[in-house]
Every structure is written in C-alpha cells, then in structure tokens.
Length: 257
Image (cartoon, rainbow, N blue to C red; front, top):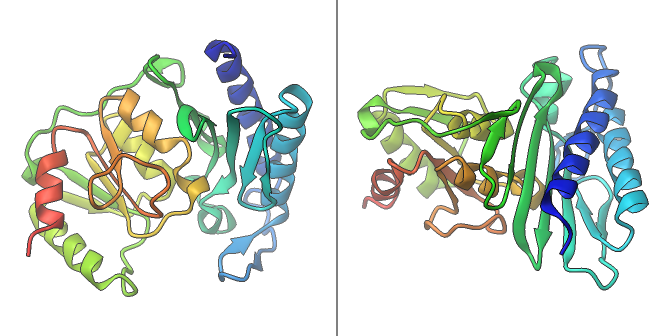
C-alpha cells in the first residue's frame, strides 16, 4: 500500500495546479461548447483534465484514471483508480460565478480512500483521507450540530426535477420541512455540509466524477453521503448528503408516501 499522506500531498498539489489553469479562463468570456448530453465544456475543462492526467501518469503510471472529458484509462495491475472532474459546475464557471470546483478522488478496489474538492476562485479546499478526518484549508472540518429539520439549511444544484417526478415530490416535502433553501450547488453544496455551513444537499442525478471525493469528505467530517435509498456509495448516479444527525429524518421525508 502507498502511504496515504504521500497520495494526499500529491492530490492537493495536482488539484491546485489544475485549478490555477482554470483561473486563467475564469471571467474572461470563455466560449462553451455543448456536449452530446447538452452540458457545457470549455477549453479550461480540457486543459485542467489534461494537466491532472499528465501528473498522475508521471507519478503513478500504473494507476487507472476516469475523467469527465477524456474517459477511462485502465489501471495496470494496480488496485488504484483516480476519478477526475476538472471543473465541477461548468455552468457556474461560464457564468463567472466562483462556486465551481476541481475534484479528485482516489479509489482502491473501487472504495474511496482520498478526496479533494478544490475551489480555485474561492481559495478554498476541502479534503479527506480515509480514517484521517476532513479538513478545510488546513483546519479540521466538522458537520453542524443541527438536529431538527425545521432548523436546517437545504441545498440543491438545480430545483428543476421535472424528469424525476418522485424526487421532485420529495424535494417539495423537504422544502416544507426545512428552514432555509438555496441553490448553492454542485460540489460547493456538499462542501458546505461538510464544513457545518449547511445541513442537507441533494441531487437527483450525478455522474461518478461529480460524486468521486464527496462520500469520503462527508463521512470524515461526521456526515453522510448516500443514494436516495440510503446506501453509502459514489456509484448510484444520485446523491443525498446530510450532517448525520438529520439523516434518518431526511430519509423519512424522502420516502414518505
């Protein structure tokens, strides 16, 4: 096994380097193309992922890579795979909104062991190593102490759940049950939960690279990151994050008939 601190130091530096590349294009009127799924992509997304792949290939040539823009590169007799999202929140990025992130996760035999969420335009980084706690800009991070839904801050990336009717009904029930609702979304919403600034963050649809570092970050901060059924995973294509204290209350509201 590779020393976890070595991997974490590498991941933090790689995320910073990739993030710095994105800043060169941020708030410059960068042009966005539309991918087949109608999501935007920019030269910044591509350059940042290329940088991450270059660094991983140089230092960990046997590791696998799964990235949003350039797909999968299988591992070479290694249990390790890096999961990359060079710009999580490209719509925010294109709009000049600083809530976008560069995300890195490392899995060992498909289990998350390291996660980094770096927010270049905010100079914030939230990160975790399995068993080592969660940190926010070098300070230990913890979820909030809120234990009643009526006092909770509820977040989502997008409240347009029209393609997910059952989930939209659950969202409306959560809106009615909570104190504040905002769309401080994408990875930043999960970072807010991990650092005690919000209590619940939900998404009806998520790609693997969107989820990569988030389960570990939330769990090491004392919270939960699951699918809508309550299973802790980054592979479900959906997500619900809580501060832990509200997990059972949130699940009861989601599955209320």
